[in-house]
Image 1: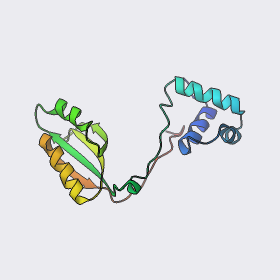
Image 2: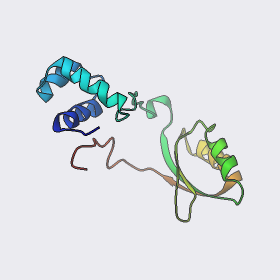
Image 3: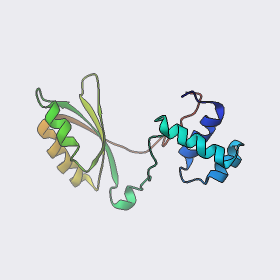
Length: 147
């Protein structure tokens, strides 16, 4: 599907607020609400829009620390680790990498004791490097046509 300027504007509006009313998107984009609805449906069918999600305040849920954990997995443990990490509730992202480390995980923990316990569980599969996130510089970047 080829995206025109209007589709990009709709995508920008949805990324900013996926619950924005169609009438408001239509007004901001300069087309009718039915046209916006039709375009959104086509973007969904084309797989460009994969879903709509709630953005949770993790700190309000009691998980005050965000950490990034890279792991150099022991030989022969990759498949087992891939299965295991999917069951670890604290890990919200796990990426397979090239380079020295095999994977990079983003996780949320309540405190340093919780982090220590998480590291203990993960270290059964390999050597860890843990980094504590201090602050966000870019958060929820809106993808636009310029990319």
